[in-house]
Structure formats: structure tokens, C-alpha cells
Length: 174
Image (cartoon, rainbow, N blue to C red; front, side):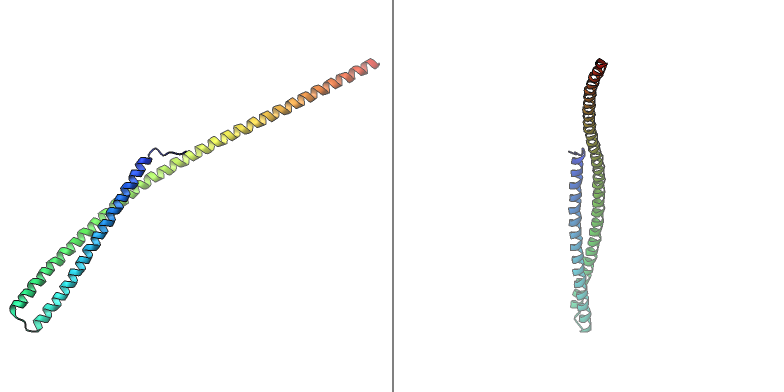
């Protein structure tokens, strides 16, 4: 049975890769949340801007315009912060992606090493099997050859003893 000496290291690398994959998923979720928050704030800012424009054309009071301007500036700041948060989240995502790629590459290196070792092991086992089969075949061949030689020798000896008896009979008749 093939046993990879670095199997535990390979398992640790696989676990590390899974941890990095979960971190990437979490980072992508956070980036999606940041994008949604940015989009919601952008939409709120656009609707507030439209409200300010509508209020200016309706001859509002100065205090109301001042308050709407303050709200609009606050929303602009929040939109900028949300955009910065989105960029930071995307940076985290790209870093997590790089770490996952590195972890996957490290695991693939060990997977390829394991495959090479397994191939060498399979070749060794096949060679040993061939050697055993050759030894068995040679043993059978030697036993058969020995049996033939024994059979041939015994038939020659029986032929020789028959031939000597007939020679003796021929010699005594003369």
C-alpha cells in the first residue's frame, strides 16, 4: 500500500487553502456589503440633491435651504467614506485572492510530488511483480526441462538395456 511521507503536510496545506477560501468569501461578502452601502448612499444623495433643486425653485426659506445643504454635505461625506470603504474592501479581496492562489499553488506542488511518488511506487511494485512472475516461469521451465531430461534419460536407459539384451542374444546365436 502506497503511503506518502508528506501526507500530513499535504493535509495541512489543504486545510490552509480552505481557510484562505473562507477568508476570500468573507472578504467578498464584506466588499459586496460595502458596495451596496455605497450604492444606497449614492441613491440617497441623488434624491436629496433632487429635493434641494426642487426646494430652490419653490422659493423656500433660507433656514430650510441651509438645513438641506448641511444634509447634502453630510451625505457627500458619507458617500466618500463608503467609496473609500469599498476600495479598502476590494483591496482586502484582492489580498485574500492572492493568499488563496498561493495556498492553492503550495498544495498543488505537494499533490504533484505525491503523484510522482505514487507513480514510482507503482512502477516498483510492477517491477517486483514481473520479477516474481519471471522467477515462477523460470522455475516451472526448469522443472519441466528436468522432468523431460529425466524421462528422456530413463527411456534411453530402458532402450539401452533392451539393445544390450538383443546384442547378447545375437552374439549367443552365432
